[in-house]
Picture 1 (cartoon, rainbow, N blue to C red):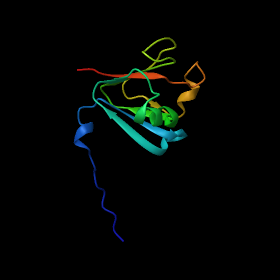
Picture 2 (cartoon, rainbow, N blue to C red):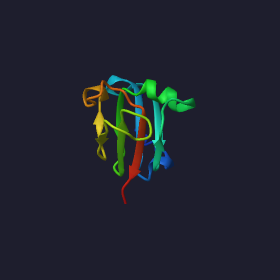
Picture 3 (cartoon, one colour):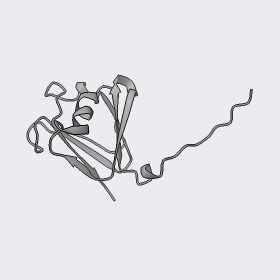
Picture 4 (tube, rainbow, N blue to C red):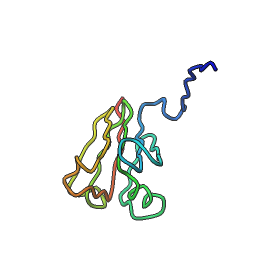
Length: 109
C-alpha cells in the first residue's frame, strides 16, 4: 500500500482569522469553527448554547485573537487568547471556573 500525502484546505480558513473549538481536551471530540470577526453577547441561545457547553480546547488562526468573558454582554472576567494559541484544556487558563457566557473573535491585518 502506498500512502500519498494530501493537503486539504478550507478557503474560509485562508484569511487566518478563525477559532476552532473542541468538545474534549487535547483537541478531541466534536469541532466547531468560527471564521472572521464575530461576537456572541450571550451563549445562552440557539447554537451558541451548544458551543458554550462544548468548549474544552481551542486553536486560533495566525490572525485571530479570542476574548472570552465570564458574563454576558462582554462583562467581567475576560481572558484573551493570542493568535496561533493552542489550549489543550481551556479550563486551566480561566480563573472563573471555566465558565464562558460571551466571546469575541477579532482579526488583525
